[in-house]
Image (cartoon, rainbow, N blue to C red; front, side, top):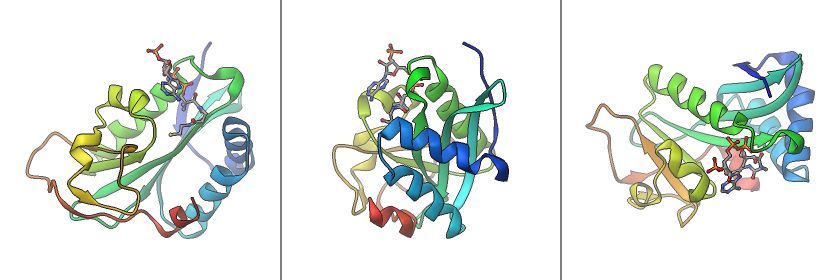
Length: 162
Ligand SMILES: CC(C)(COP(=O)(O)OP(=O)(O)OC[C@H]1O[C@@H](n2cnc3c(N)ncnc32)[C@H](O)[C@@H]1OP(=O)(O)O)[C@@H](O)C(=O)NCCC(=O)NCCS
């Protein structure tokens, strides 16, 4: 299975929504993406494409935090293309781009069994105060050191609808 990763373009929006509706079997994540975009909180949006068709998408949005922090999510892959490495490639590419651009921390809400392979840690997130804190709340701190390990962190307002 081949695919390429590139930055999302305006013309991809409908296909991105379709991917999330199919991946999550509902509207919530597609609406979340739309709200984050409408609020201008989207910082990095990557799509996986195969033959011109969007088969996966990941969004990174700005947070209020004691460091330069992004939230990863939603991440969705078309059901017929799951478990083919596309989600991993989107996460790894997004993390690399974000850290190269100076973002110091990336938070995610999800399954630790999936995200720990990318360096996300539930334990590292326990020091942060968030309405989403708990066993599915993780952070990956960029490697340069000197980054806060405690304090209040807040997702973009659109996440309140989750
Ligand atoms: C979860 C999801 C993003 C993973 O993307 P993907 O392209 O299917 O996954 P990859 O091929 O990169 O990775 C496959 C690996 O992840 C594991 N995996 C897939 N989904 C998983 C899940 N929900 N929990 C734990 N592990 C998972 C697979 O077992 C596989 O592990 P292995 O390499 O050790 O065999 C994708 O399956 C998806 O869109 N699911 C529905 C929506 C969703 O749950 N999104 C995540 C929101 S936090």
